[in-house]
Amino acid sequence: MIKEIDYLYQRATIIIHFLLSKSKDGSIIRQFETVVNDAYKNKKVKDLKSLSRDLNSWAKGLSRNDGKQLELILKDKFEDDLSGDSVTINAIQDLLNKGKIQNEESYRIIHEYLLEITKDDLFYERKPALENLIKEYDSTHI
Image 1 (tube, rainbow, N blue to C red):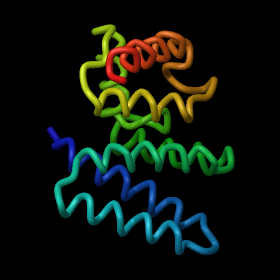
Image 2 (image 1 turned 60 degrees about the vertical axis):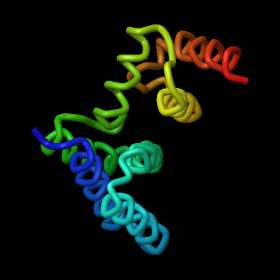
Image 3 (image 1 turned 180 degrees about the vertical axis):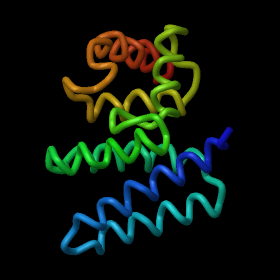
């Protein structure tokens, strides 16, 4: 089984290379790639998780055809798609099952997810429950 940090890095690299192949000026994407490489080299899993969510959001802005093409690549390589990396999806599912945010990392995952949530997202129907988890955490940690 692939380690979490390796999965996040490989997945990010695939998305970055795909975005570069579709970009006329890849300078910003290359800068992002440098940040991903640095996070991986320095074993910063938390940063790679956050960068993964950013890449998902960025890739959702692709044209419909390009988005489908990237989703096929992710499906083939990792059995996932742009609804989120498996680390984020598993973390959100776990939080919904527990019914409580227990730390800052979990809070950040849900907060960032809710900032970008759309009707097509995996947990869209659970949005009110996720918002309630945020409110409950805020009320006890302010």
